[in-house]
Image: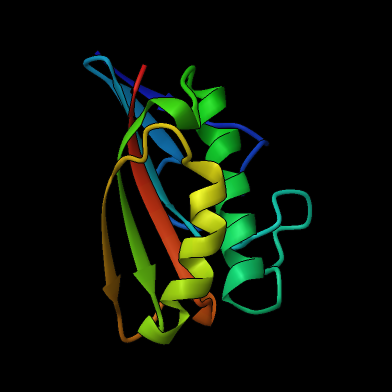
Length: 125
């Protein structure tokens, strides 16, 4: 069974996609960018500030789906500039302490709304 997850704990989808999908004991979260869920506006600032907002968005959506950041098994990090890796990684490391998930990090030519970071994840329910 496939279930759509929609919550105000993360930004509303800005296109034809779901915030998350629950399926077969997993939850798959769409990539989050640093949109404030209350205002739907981009959080300005450096990569660290944007990563913090992204991870708070992911936390809200994964918890609304019935899981948690401690149950994340895989993340993919998209950076507009790989020079932001250290700043992103420092913030990221505070959210995934005991059992860091598998992760891929890639630099991309552009992200939605010209943000610096986007992260997607998969967690077990």
